[in-house]
Every structure is written in structure tokens, then in C-alpha cells.
Image (tube, rainbow, N blue to C red; front, side, top):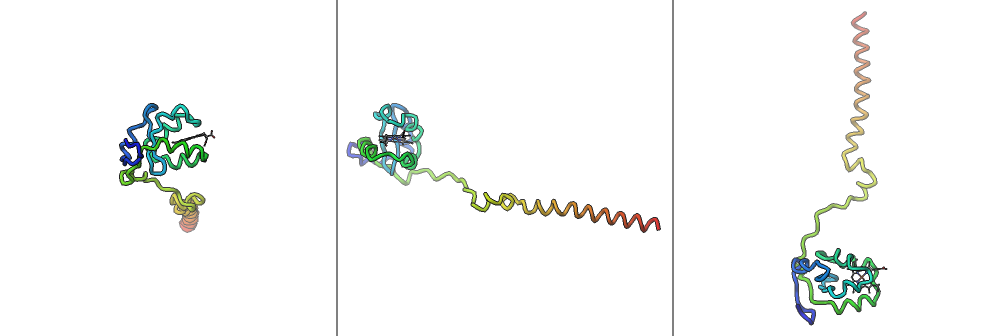
Length: 139
Ligand code: HEM
């Protein structure tokens, strides 16, 4: 721990402090020990707990905390997070605008549509062929 807030912690180390009595947060690259603040936090302690083990910057900003909150948080800084220890981002893929508006194109639906058209046409052709065959064989 560093009173001057200069200590550098790994992401994993910070993640271990995920308890009501021992809660560390990562906001804007800095590490905050908010354990003494849990019960006072106007947003409740649950949200703070839910923000452990990850980078809580976006969550913190999304709330639109006031300047007062930002001043307040300064007293809980205990150091910085070592950026190189951040776990890689989850490998998920955001569907492109195209895939969302045209589900057919994304799921190979174009082929399905073709098949759906081709089958009745083929059946019709077969029916004609059979009719012709029947005609010629009775003549
Ligand atoms: C050191 C970190 C934090 C401090 C010092 C802090 C401080 C405060 C303060 C003073 C407020 C009252 C409103 C304001 O003045 O903005 C507040 C509200 C709130 N905070 Fe935090 N907060 C911290 C982190 C977080 C985090 C990580 C979350 C996660 C989402 C969060 C969620 C909320 C929510 C939901 C409210 C209630 C907003 C409302 O009811 O309008 N806070 N916080």
C-alpha cells in the first residue's frame, strides 16, 4: 500500500479485493480502496462490489458522478494499475449493421430462398415431363 498513491498493482492483485470489507476499484487507471466508503456511498455498496475485478471506469462515468464525487474519490486512491496486466478483452463480435438489418445475408438465407424457389419449379418440371411421358406412351 502506498499513502502517496504511487504503488503499482497488477489487475489480478486488485481483483482479489472484492469484499464488502475489502473493496478495491479500478477507475481511470487508478486503484481505489473504497472499503471505508461502502456504507456511505449514495449509490449503495452493491454497485461498488459489482465493479470489482474489472475496469470500472465506464460504470463510474456512465452514472454521471458530480464534481463532489470526483473530489471525494481522491482520498481513496492507493495507487495505479499496471496496464500490462489487464486481461485481454473478451472475444465477442458485434453484429454489423448489415447483418442486423438483413438477417438473410448473415445466415446464408440467400441460398435457402433459392432452394425454396427451385424445389417447386423442379416439381412443376417433373409433373410436365410425367404428363408428356404419359401422353406419348398412350398414343
Ligand atoms: C471512488 C469511487 C466512487 C465514489 C467516491 C462515488 C461517489 C458517489 C457520490 C458522492 C454519489 C452521489 C451523487 C454524486 O455526487 O455524483 C454517488 C452516486 C452513485 N454512484 Fe458512486 N462513487 C464511486 C464509484 C461508483 C461506481 C464504480 C459505481 C458503479 C456503477 C457507482 C454508482 C453510483 C450510483 C448508481 C449512484 C447513484 C446515482 C443516483 O442515484 O442518481 N459509483 N457516488
